[in-house]
Amino acid sequence: MSVLERFLLVLVLCICLKRSEGGGRRFEHWVSGIEAAVTTYETIVVDQSGEGNYTTIQSAIDAIPSDNLHWICIYVKTGIYNEQIKIPYDKPRIYLKGGGKRKTYVVSSSHNSIETDATFISQADEIVVKSITFINSYNYPLGSNGNPIMPAVAAKISGDKSAFYRCGFMGVQDTLWDDAGRHYFKLCSIRGAVDFIMGSGQSIYERCTISVIAGFLSPQPGFITAQSRDAAVDPNGFVFKDCNVIGNGTTYLGRPWRGHARVLFYNSTLSDIVVPQGWLDGDFIGTTMNDLVFAEDKCRGDGSDTSRRAWWESRLSMDEIRRLTSMSYIDEEGWIKYQAFNMLP
Image (tube, rainbow, N blue to C red; front, side):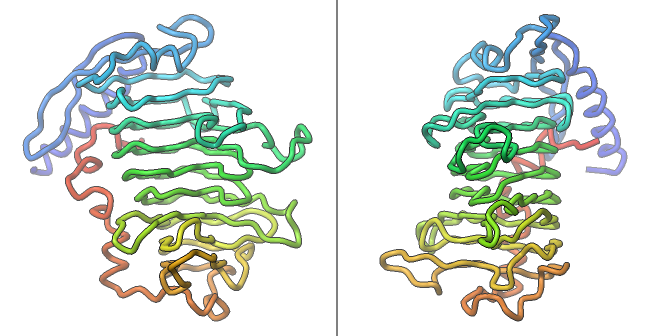
C-alpha cells in the first residue's frame, strides 16, 4: 500500500468513526487488507436519558441477532451504567465504544461466582472495546462499604481476537480475568491488589498502567498476575510491553495459577513497590519451578533491579523475547493489523 493510500485510509477511518456517534445511522467503513475493501455497519446508541436507541447496554447487545456476520457498533454515551453486561458466544463482531475512560463507567457489585458474576463478560470472538471503564464495586474503592477482600471480577474475557483500547478495569482481587483467547490491551488502566490480572489468555498489554493498591495488605505484598498456562506446549501467556507499574504498598510481579505459567515484563517501568524477589513460586503436582516462565527484559525504575530476584526467574533468549513481544505472537493472521477499529486519536 502506497503512502498516499495509507493517508486516504486513515482519513476515511477518522471520518467514519466520527460519524458513528450518531444514532442508528449506517455508513461506509474501510477495512484494510492487501487491497482496501468497503463494508458497512450499523451504530446503535445507548443513552440513559432516552435519547438513543436503548437506555441500557445489555438491551442493545440483546438486540443484535445471533451469529451476526457484520460488525455492529454500540456507542455508549457518557454516564454511570449500573448493570452487568454479557456478550454471549453467538454475538461476535461487536464494537463497544464509550464516551471516554473517565466518562463512561459500567459498575456492578456482583461477586457470588467468579464464573458468572463479573461486571462485564465477553464470550464471543472478534470484540473491540474502547473508552469504557469496568468496575466491580463489591469491595472497591477500598473501605467504601466494609465488604471483605475476596474475588470480585470487573471483566472476564473468554473470546478469541478481542481488543481493548483506552479501557479501565477496577477492582481489588481478580479484577481482570484474561480467561482464554488472543487479546490485545493498549493504553488501558488496570487496578487491584491480589491476582488482579489472571487467567490463560494469550495477551499483549501495551503501554498500560498497572496500578497496585496493596497498601492495606502491609506488611504482606500483593500480586499483579496469576497466569494459568497448563503445559509447556500451550501458546498462552501475558506480555507486558512498555507498561508502567505504580501504586502503594508492595507487590510481587506474579505467582502461578498453573504449573507452566508464563509472564514477561518487557521495556517497562517498575516502581519501588515491586519486592526484590519479584516472583513467588507455587506447588503443582508434576511440575517444578523450572517449568515456570517468569521473565523481565530491558525494564527500568527502582523496582527493576534483578540482582535479588528469585533464583529460578527465567532467562529468555533474544529470539524468544522478540517472538513474545512481536504483534505476531497474537496477530499472526492480521486480525489487529487490518482491524478498522484500532485507530487511536
